Image 1 (spheres, chains in turn red, yellow):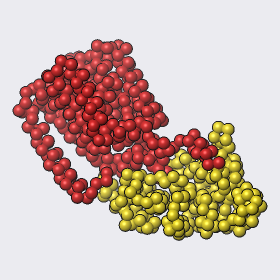
Image 2 (spheres, chains in turn brown, blue):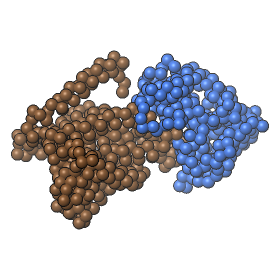
Image 3 (spheres, one colour):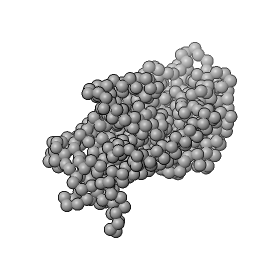
Length: 341
Length: 252
């Protein structure tokens, strides 16, 4: 944050050029690369949206959530369960429905988990995420551990006119790109707004934020729900892309992977998590084609990156174990008072 | 008689087996500095935390004007008009002076949590912030990151943040702690100005400052009030001399 005025100017110019360049590249790319990579890029962008969503609570809210995959997967299941057997579901009905269902679930999980702090918040969100995982894994609601197929992709039809064909890989690519762009735009507005500044203030010093009059609990709950709804959009599109949902989509393994993307990209910047998502998924693709034991190599590379990148792991550590005395803690006060006497 | 802005009645706070505050009653009037003094461990900080809502009371009542605020959480009390500083400087260390005070002004702007519109363009809030920064004399430091400032300046900043919330009652927990002579003099002058149209409750160990500032005093020991009144009355109170000074001390 402590930037010189000149440095800010240069970096914002660089930022703008980079933004325009990557936008141009992303518009041309689907026409020049093989279909496999068009699909891969769509998938990477959806992971990017999920990482951006997670970073609203992790980076800006200071809350490390391990249940965002559950929101992602739940939205996929909403699509799968509402898709008729004979044709595609309407995206204009099922997407808002998925967002509403996830918002409601996130509100309940958030309201309970946000009563805890630091490592306990991670544990609480992990537990709720796993509950949703087992709900679909161990019951017949969504085909159990086998998952369910979505035989017809959702349709975007208004008054008989088909806007896009989600079955077409190029169309799907542009839908994902549009969703990513809207997410970035929305989050950029949000973090600069009074709400975004209040959220960051609560992260930096909860006690001071409260004593200035900010309803910290409500702020965090709102951020948690907004973040979950964005994750739901990514999950819905992901289910539509592959025509298949399975419990693994909700599991903590995916939550942790997305957290790694966020940390790799940097917690304190808006586009960082997107860079982290694309970098991690690109790395996977490259390693898959080079090594048989690619997961082992990937693990070693991630460990090296997390240790070497400035800020990455330390920032996360600071969130898990906040400095003593920052959060209101009545028992701590008692000890302090005693120590004075 | 002056208007009572803040009143505490029979406040108790127990921490496990320890009675930190045991039945404290006091009131703070508009336009006065009411100082609370007492030896370490007397329960002064706990009292401030009970008044601000940082710690809930075990029993007793806190009223702000005509309003019972006993059960309100700290953020709701701040919105109702109670501002406070902490014994350990409590500011947003990595933000600029302007952003620190701007947040305080934003919280009381009527659109504290709006989801749209960049804060840079909110002129009413920015002006309110700059006015509060000017009032404590930090205008030239507006763009400085808080943690790069001296301890004294950080405490001035904390006061500016409190002012930007437009409080009717200000609670100050040892505002002079750790300050040098010159810094302390500036802070004393600042506190003297704060009481205009507001009520100030001051907890402080620096007796020179207390007797320079206080219109009335409450003396606490072991969580209870042992004396209260004007500085002159308190100075000559036998219980104060016994509890606070030992038998042979001389106040101020």
